[in-house]
Amino acid sequence: MRLNRYLAAAGLGSRRSVETLILEGRVKINGQVIEDLGTVVAPGDVVKVGSKIVTPQEIVHAVLYKPRGFLCTASDERERRTIFDLLPTDWPRVYHVGRLDMESEGLLIVTNDGELSMSLTHPKFKFEKEYEVTLDKTFDPSKKEKLLHGFYIEGGRAKMEEIEQVAANKLRVVLTQGIKRQIRLMLYDCGYEVENLRRVRIGTIRIDKLRAGMWRMLSPKDVADLKAGRAPKKREEPRELIRADAPTVFRSRPGKTGGR
Image (cartoon, one colour):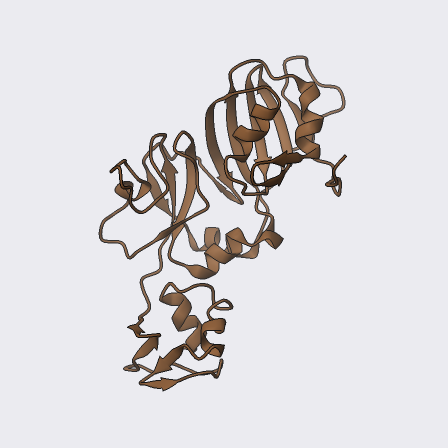
């Protein structure tokens, strides 16, 4: 097995990112510093990064439905419930990719695959994340232009990619950013409190039949689609004339990201 793949399988990052460890001379095989990226690890070789022996782990790719009231952290000094209380204790160490705040619920990907984590978090992939949002009052469609155009909140310039009003006080929102509490802060700026927020899709992965607290393994196709940055099948565009009770879809204008 090539050394970069071996280190990635040990949970140290993507195959590309662990190459930095090799080039910096931090990796040893059988006591010898290795800086050749083409090095192959043979059976019985002892691989160290710094002073720590590393070995490939069983790779886990799973999706979890995080319930409200659970934290996205490995431990909590106040002993509150965390998402890791919901996962099998015999799994190797896994990490959540992205997060949901304590009051929110829905999809989280948990994995020890550094390459997948890199694909999901690298800005160039612009992964879509879809949310169902319930507000404290009726949504005013005149606010949609501001939300799609974007504005500054704590954490940076934020914008929504798509908004669909599915009921008087309920929205379907699509983001490609990952700013902390982005939806809550953007809607608060527009005069709304978010009463419930549920993430129902990450890239091509949908919540489907998962219920709160449940998890399932991702299929090889799921993982391949995520790593390739594939987009889900798009919904049909709304007709120009629609029924009065039909949902209205608002989309961000491509390329319109500058401030006013």
